[in-house]
Each structure stands twice: as C-alpha cells, then as structure tokens.
Length: 594
Ligand SMILES: [Zn+2]
Image: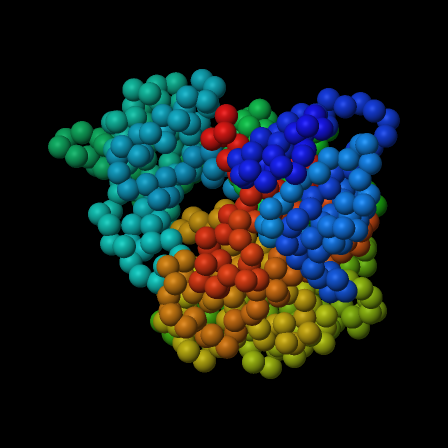
C-alpha cells in the first residue's frame, strides 16, 4: 500500500492519480485499526473562502473534518504511519458547492425520464426503451415535457427553430405493453398515451370525442396516441398515480445523487415531500447519502414542526431541519410574478398573489401571509419566502420589518427566495434588514432573451442585480432551482450559475459584454455565494462553507483555476473530485480507467 504513495508514481499522470485514489479508498475501507487515518491532500491551489487565510496548498483530514490547512510543508509535517497522501498536482480546490435551492424529488423524477430536449423519434424510442427496461410491470411512465426546446436553445438568446417534435406513440407501443405511458408536452397543450394507458384510464378514442373537453387526434383515420384539450380533467386525473413506489423513488434518488456528485455539490437546500426526507434518512443509514441536505417544509406546516419541537438548527450535519418555505407571487416564465406596474407586453396584467395571500375568490387579504410569518417565526423557525416581481419583493420587506417590530429583533436570517426584480429604493432595505438573497443566477441566462420585452429596460436594471444586492450589504447566496420549470431545465452544475453571475451572458456567450454588465460580480464573490454564504443561510457557517480547521471536509477539486482563467472559460471547468466528509464520492474518469 505504501509503495503506491511514493511521489514518483503520483507524478506520472492524473490517470495514475485516479488509480491510486481508488486503491486508497479500498485500503482505507479495509483497515479497521482503532487509530483514525489521516488523509493529506497536498500540492494543490486551494481557495479556502476563509478571508483570514484565503490560500493554502494542503489540507489534512481526520474523522471527516479538516485538522490542518496550510502550506505543503506545514501539513505534510503531520504525516505519520496512518497517513495517506494525495498529490493534487497543482489543481484548484474550493469548498464543496452548497446549492441554496433544489427540488430534489422532481429532479430525481426528471432524471429518470424526460424528453425535453429530444428532437427525433429515434431518441424518443431510445429514452422510453431505457426507462421501461427498469420499470416493474404495471408502473406508469409519466413526465415527458417534449417541445420545450423546439423554438429556442438551452440558455441562449436565440431560437433554434427546429422542426417541432411530437412523439410517435406507435413506435413504443410494443415495448410498453405492460407499462401505461401518459406523457405531456411542456406547455400541457398535448398529451401522449399508449394502449396500456388508454386501458387503465378507461378511455376509448373516438372522433368526435365522447369525453367533453378532450380531443383525440386522428391521423389517416387512426388514433395516433395524442390527446388535446382539457386532458388532465376529472375523467383522467384520479386514475393517474400521484406518486411512485418507494423502491422506484429510492432508485431515482440514487441516480440524482450520482448526478450531484459529478458537479462538486456537497450540500443542497431541498423542498421536497416527506417521503423524500424519509429516503434521505434511509440512504444515510445505509451509508449511501453523498450530499448533505438542508430540508424545508411548506410554511403552512409550521405548527406541525412546532409540536415536534423542531427549530432552527434541528437535525444534524447531514440532514438539517428548521426552515420553512412560502410563496407570495408567481414566476417570470408565465408572467405571473407580481409587479407594481403592468407587464410591458401585457398591459392588463400585473401578475398574481399566491394562495396564502388571498381569499377563496382570489382577492388579496391584508395580513394573511404575515400571520403565518409571525407565528412560524415565534416558534423559532427560519422563514424563506419566494418573491419575484418588484411589488412582491417590496411587500415581503415590509413584512420583515413588521416581524422585527412585533417579534423583536433577532438573528433570523430571513431568506428572500429568488429576489428576481427589486425596485430601486428597495436595495438599501435588503441590506438594512440583513436579508439573505437566495438567488439562482442561471435564471438570468435563461430569462434574458425576453426580460426587456416583458418588463421594459428600466425595471430590468433591478433584475438579477447581484452586484447591487452585494453592495447593499445583504448576503448573496447561490443555487440552481434544479431541475427547473416545465419549459426550461436548470442544471445542477454550479458553473452555469457562476458563469451567469460573473459574465451575465447566455451559455453561448451573448450579449458580448454581458446583460446589464454593471451588475457583474467577481469570481471570488460568486464562489463565496455558492459556498460560505449558503452555509450561513442554513445557519451552518460554523461547520460548512469554507476550508478551515474544524469544519467538515467537503470540497471539490476542479480542472482549472477559476481565479486565473479568463471568465469566458468558466463553463469549461470540470470537477475532478468531489469529497464529502473526507470521503471521495466522485472521481472523473473512473469508468474509463476500468
Ligand atoms: Zn424553486
């Protein structure tokens, strides 16, 4: 074993490095000596995100935590008989990425099956074949979202105008005999069903349709599997399973964890259902959880948590509770985010308030949402509230002032979720109120193609205005909103968000000097927003978010030095290793070495 760790061998190539790490992991897992092993990573370019000593060359890890951070000389001095060393070959290291906003259960479903970017029947058939091969008999195939990228390319400002894609269900009929297929177009304008689904739903295609509101599409006198109209109607909806089996969800979760590991993400802030929380616990118990989770319930459930005495800080370093999520307005994508003035492209529309803001007739009820906030806050829970339009953001700041007034000042770390469009006068208040702006910068790359058309130039100055948020003194925290909306995928890869914040461009580099370039932030601030600041937003900055002695050993080794490369190359950065709690959970190239 020691033979493998000589410097000579390590220097040969990164493939050798990978092999060594594999053997090392094997060796570590084999060893059952009472004395804990020390793992030393040295010869790296380590950006610690610790302002007091931002640079280091080496770290020593013991029992899942950093026990030394410093120069090669200092750290290698700790070497003893139980030490393993890894030569980082100068590679760039950052704290593990801490994503402030994911919808894990949806992402796990999405990864199992989606045809969002599929543009050919061959690809479609392949996707269906892959997924049904793993499905138990009788299990449904749902989702789909075809057509989302027919008219524009991912994260670009322009259209790709490809030939619109519609799945040909006759091609998958044979392979899906025992699995009902009920999939949809991204905008819900069309649905596709196979024979098994027609049977399970008890629908018989006919023209004209016998089902009110539903149209069966016939081609050459034959039903082609496509439904239009009010498909998710009372006839259909109750017959479609609302959830998958626990086994299937475990499998989906495993796949999603593998995806997360690839991108150096070591912590996510999730808002899934209770079963997902249960699954995290099961996988953690089995030693399979490879990302730490900050888990939020919906705000209306605050008293359930209060009854269980769950407060800020509840849980442990793997699964943290204590946060609540609420929504007050809609989203930009559907022009439902709430603004003071109407949308520029839709003069009758200012967006809408969400359910907890209104009465049964949809009328705004003064103080209704505030009451939830006051009660939940009093119960010692952390509030995180979705606000996108300028009026929504303005109102939530008022509520926050009210919270301070009625419940008293305290370290509540209010998270303003998305904080997309801020009115000019409100930036100052963000700072004064100590708000955490929980933003997902890739939204900017994705939305800029229509932002000005929808809200005009002036209001766009306050949109995704990360520099102004930072300058206000508020805390800027980054994440993704993975997996995105029905119309756009927001990948888990942190480089998409870092690129968006630093360059303010689409994935294809438009516009050349950036969209409202005065709001660009530095790469250092972007990394901090994706690590330490999210740890702070989770009340975990004492154990996560930077590479410091005593903190959990979560880090990512990257293929290039983000501080030195041209910002144009950020998207080319790849993750070489992801380490969580001192364990290497991802190594790039592992498969090709085998
Ligand atoms: Zn979200």
